[in-house]
Amino acid sequence: MKKILLAGKVILGAGLLLVSLNSCKNENKQEDPKEVAEDSNEAKFDSIADKKDDSEFLVDIAEVNLAEIEIGKLAQTKSTNPEVKKFGKMLVDEHTKSASEVSALAKAKNFTLPTSLTEEGQEEYKKLNEKSGLDFDKKFADMMIDGHEKAIDKLQKATKDAKDEDVKLWASNNIAPLTAHLEHAKLLKQDLDKKK
Image 1 (cartoon, rainbow, N blue to C red):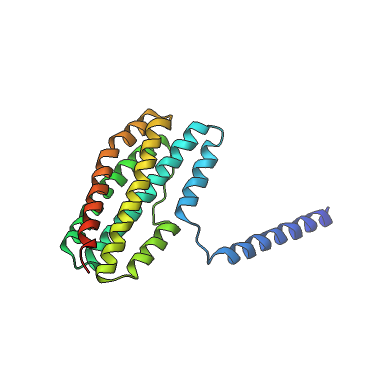
Image 2: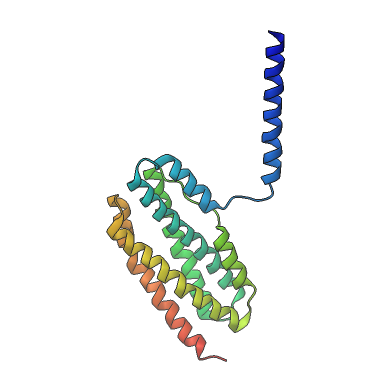
């Protein structure tokens, strides 16, 4: 009997050692917030495909909001162009409002969302932050056009494909504001392209 207990303790000790060594090895690399949210939703809704697709849409929109807020803040502090600064402030204000709505909707549906900038968002932010002056402003305008076009595509897809009526309605209601942002970004780019 003592041998069995001793063998059990040895096996348990070896298992704990392996787990702690493995966690030490991975502690330098923090997992991407988007992946954490998607994994959590996948675990919750793996058997319910409808909810999984709707949760992925909200995770994507949360990711967009987080990126737009941070890039909007950067534009306000780094640009010297008053129009770029104004656009940056509008992005922060409107995407903060959108983030709050998405968060409330996700909470009501028991979906998990990323709460900090994703790896892709950090990479975009870094690329923009490396620029200065007119180069910064032009890169900012290009990013806003590209980002808003992608976000509008996601919203349009959700208005057709979302299974949850609340998710579908939210997507439908937010196409117009994002389209206004896109048009504003295009006008900003036109003005910036005239400058040397």
